[in-house]
Amino acid sequence: MGTASLEVDPDSFVKLDAFTSQTYRDVYPAIDPTRPELSQAGKVIVITGASRGLGRLSFAASFAHAHADAIILLARSSINLAETEKLIKDINPSTCVLSIVLDICDEAKVKNVFDRIKNQFGIPHVLINNAAVLPSQGKITEQKSSQWWETHEVNVRGTYNVTKAFLQMTGPNPANPTTIINVTSAAGHIVAQGMSSYCLTKLAVTQLTAFLKNEYPGITSVSLHPGMILTDMGSSVSWLEPFMRDTAELSGGTAVWLSTGDKSFLSGRYVAANWDVAELERRKEEIIRDNLLTVCNLYAS
Image 1 (cartoon, rainbow, N blue to C red):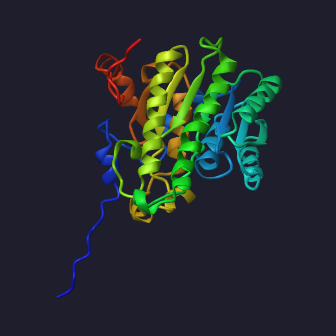
Image 2 (image 1 turned 60 degrees about the vertical axis):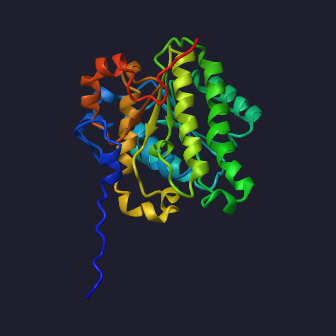
């Protein structure tokens, strides 16, 4: 008698994290970045972690499709930045691209880079905090402390450094609509064995987003779970591969949508790219009234 194989539902995690009745795993009309209603014309976009994965295939590509005036690509290695730049130019030759090698853990260098961006392009309209690492897996006693903390250095300190430099440019009440998208993860809300460092950093970034909304209400700050996409980072967690069915275009389109019009009702909140944005709009009053999609329900001033 043979052993029956266990069937895996590739939508399991999407269903567990679902806030809207309709969910998606690929780009759909409401978030299609080529729609004129989602045009990013006239905007300057800054993307960290732009040399590969989501930085390139999701965010750089989607904002190029949306006709952003300029896209600044930040990454700690120059190896693949040229490929991201080429992708943008292939999609939209009129988009100006600036690639900068930057270690986001170095606060002084981050500030210098943002001074350069301001001098060349003015104050950016959108910041995508995408840079992250997942170098350490295993039980706490099995990991090297240096690797465990490296995840925090990049994912939390790096995000903080970039966000601080961006806010120092924009001020608390920017003249133009301004958006910060912190790429977080549903992993921040679960206990995944062997991934303590990564999960904790994503929870921290989600909470940082809530602080941004509280301290800088004039800026729309959103935590975005990009979905489960088979990137280099994602493939390093082999047991998750059967669930990685989301396209890069899904999170990219969602980011463009979040950067368009008044999305302040989602500021300080967690949003998954899989969720139906039309339903989010319909439930706007409920989300605000009941303070939904947040980790913390108490604000102390």
